[in-house]
Image (cartoon, rainbow, N blue to C red; front, side, top):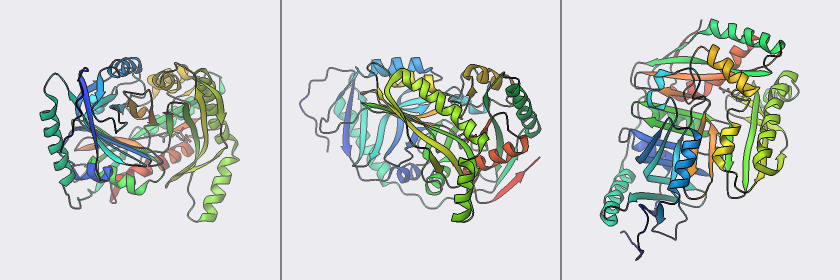
Length: 445
Ligand SMILES: C=C(O[C@H]1C=CC=C(C(=O)O)[C@@H]1O)C(=O)O
């Protein structure tokens, strides 16, 4: 039953929120096939999940400046019909890795970034699960809400049984070109043209049955603890992943980010795992690779925050890989917008390189393929308060029904050896390979 207070409606949009009881990951899975413009996003600590459907607006291929402009304008355009709920509309989606980089046509509408302003927004945090309905007020509000509440009831009631997992064929693309590029990059670094560059490569997937991105997401959620989980769908392309890396979280007082760079495999026993972790923490090349990221983030953050703190170094352990990790945070300076800092941080040298512009130019000219949204920021942005959280969209891939493209990259510095870097990217494909199927045929070159 919809309970509206006797509020005077003065804004072009109204938001009506209420509590529900549901697991959003399950809900997204149970409703597979019903929505083809949707975004699911879950924080690595599991403390916040969004699922947004039925966009009121799409923002396709927009710069961070344009998204910020939209955020500012829209924050004045809605009113809360349910003051007992401190919900706000949010934008869900992500930016491309580099809008001026190499083209990546397979991504279609997602190539240059994609955000939605959902009409139906599910949100789950530590305390509650809510649904927020956003309706224009130039038509009568109550009937629109009645229709949407009915739709939510149907969404909550849907059930789905186990789905088949396809047998998948994988092919590593442009391996020789990529190995050569690692060597060229090492030479450029030795010649002081670059300090570091992160080179990515691709694995192309085909299957004996259509890919099902909602099932892949669900498997990633079950398999990959301690990672962000995301699904961004625009028509017949879906970007899915399980990333360990936070790019930026903003609340009213603080900016929180992280340096995640330097990698080694997990051990088969706790003893071996511990020994590999220690090896990583004391390895000169990996520490150098990591330190460049810490220094750049610290320097950028200091422009937007006071009391910048680099927390204690530790290992970030995911199912298939472990990384050197530093949390980094600061107190927000007045007036510093989240998206300005996001644009200044991205790409950090964990995804682009150092110096930033030289590394981006290097990648745009030489990397075998465009990245689309791989390595770009993916997350949510508040349209009331200037807050949100974005992960780095890695350990990910983009899917049509017939094909998938997985991406994995690694930081190249002076001591990098091409064959080892290829193995490292192999490790970074693992989470998605595990998520996509249990039956694999991989063509290695
Ligand atoms: C570029 C990727 O990983 C980055 C994040 C963590 C560790 C990295 C590394 O050790 O090279 C990469 O910088 C990827 O997974 O595709």
